[in-house]
Length: 618
Image (cartoon, rainbow, N blue to C red):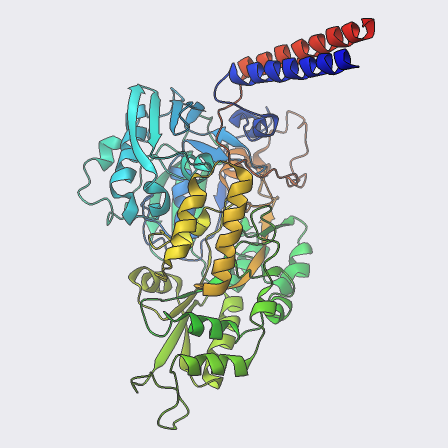
């Protein structure tokens, strides 16, 4: 029996040793779960002999692009142009795999903070000059220098430097290991042409009205209040898109956008179709609907640089003045999740804290409790005019701004405004045109402001939103104990430890309530397949994404001399098997690694067989 135990233990340690060998032969370590997060970009670009290039895709925008600067843009409409004109190092596919966009391969060195990227040699800028490692190093060094003043402030502080190894190889050094580097930096930062941007005196105020990038489309023109236009980059290094050109008409009214869609004047509705219009859209033979639950929220900023928004009790009082469950059921007709007081929606497992009570449990609708909290911070009606004054006896009047193109947000902003009035706070609600709203937000010129978005698959988005120096902390609310936790979670590589910290962060957010998260909306995007087909869909992305642009083909131009392997008008099947990106950085898995795994497995099997044989003989 003793010999059996000794032999068993020997077998165990031999197996462990072999597994350790096979996992360290190819550095850095890549486990079986992590292998699934990488893919080959060319597996996501379909080309058939019957696909004919050409045609104009029409994708509407709801507002003007205030800037096309990849460092400072703030809106979805600006992103739509920037994302097809410029390239990132890598891209996240609709089924949540990282693939190369400018980088054909990459690896993380054993120190855990140095990344090496090898670029596609045939990538060029739209003026014909080659894309080199120098451009990548310039972009990342620029980000390290001034990025704390851009939309990338939250991640720019993580970058130490970048250096050129050779023409198509670059090293990026981080100050500390950062688990979501691939998701939050490599797939987000747009690479800039050094020969242009090195001559710009102030990159932070530069509007970049005629952007020149390396992406699949070349910027053509912008007619103010009418449209933007891009044309195909025939020499794109991943293969030219089949679309000939894309026109982005500016349609600020959702009903007008839906009408244009129903007439076939545009190919997609880029804002959620009105829920009451679902049946009407379904009745259009060539229309398809794709639902996406946002990882961000429809939410309201409190300007903590102004009184009384800087008072936690005031922000809590506002939470008591709206019933989120009713907002979901009545305004959104059930097409939303109740806004989490911890910000992260419940769909973001395992990061969303499952022990966090719903808003209605923590802050149930109650005018009486709201009044009590306002009394506690000294907001009282001193002169008897029905409106509360400040503790110093000064008149108080607050304004809530919201985007006028979204009737749903206008409605619940109305509710908050009216209920603030009912408890004695003189409040008005002003829906604003989009560019005016964004200008107010960027300037910090607001009391409370309703907006939306700003979500991610990784919880480090909480740093951007709530850290004192976070790039999206537009309300400027600041809490030292929250800052320390937000910093700590960034550098923890143990997943379970990081989950614990992220859950603590959400508990503090539920107490401090720096934002009012109304809902996590379920967007119903509509797209047509009678003009273009080949849409690439995923659970977290709208139909207008990089991979759709690379795959869409004009149905009416399909060759009639060749029988398609797939009918041109076959409805696109969404990808519905998402795998959340691992937060542990790894390297791209190649044939060499697969070979070593195979060798390791064979060795383990052989050792087990020999051990069992020896045990039996004993």
